[in-house]
Length: 407
Image (cartoon, rainbow, N blue to C red; front, side, top):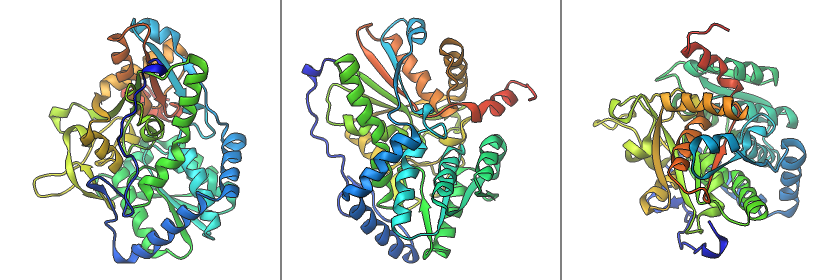
């Protein structure tokens, strides 16, 4: 998309003082958490405007995380699609192998400035758990990571990585034994240990200020991408594509482009075995508004209002809700949301690996699958930029088991 034709969309992407994006967001939390959330809000708004704090974060992102991550032209994938150029924002090249470290670096520094001695986190695919354990080790803090029993099995490599880093991995055996339940248990821990514990939420969900804070720390991805596109291609991308579970990697990419009318933004949810089957994790495609984990957003529930079990081949997308800003972007029409099935994601996992020598996370494979499909129907002079949010080493065991291979 030519920068000369980039009109500005007057869509507000900032929440009000109570953390609402339109009718979504807010603070739906127990009285015992309100003081901790207010303390966090005050600390975040203080330190994000502190030049020394931000300079330390920028230095850590550059020299510890390895930013900026490059934009890569996937030539063979583009040739296979036969349409628009496909570019990948290589978040898989970050230290710890995913975009999650952007947020944990920021929140880890905030925890340090708040004088918290202990860090807790929840994780599904394990990447946020690894990133939280990494930051805790670097800052010399205790760390406990809550993880569903199902995810512990399918992400065994990341579980061992967390333990190597000194974190305690606490299995969650309630509910569906996946990400939703891990978040529930982490919340319970926080309520019990508010004085000395900092809870690093891994996505743009939860009560205010988490959706705003996590987005802001991840928006480094979109700021870099925007600058890199103008420097390398003298144009903005025609389409941005990113997978959406809770939605942090997608908002990290989307946010700096929200005002650019000519840039389409497409979030890709986990359609699992198909939206019609009910075995999926596509809250925006097939859910409805409600309250989950401290905020109002789109979620998956039954007629009695009970949260339903989700399914995805990718542990990181196996969540029955989504960040409230995504709900707002859907309702305003600024972003589009689609579903990609397990089968399509697995095909894309193999395709990118064979054509480009890049092993994508199963979460990212959903975005690659839809980005490839979009590129095939576009002109060769157009550009699709896909956020490759993580690398696929962690998913090798899952893929092998699905294909009947014993490692």
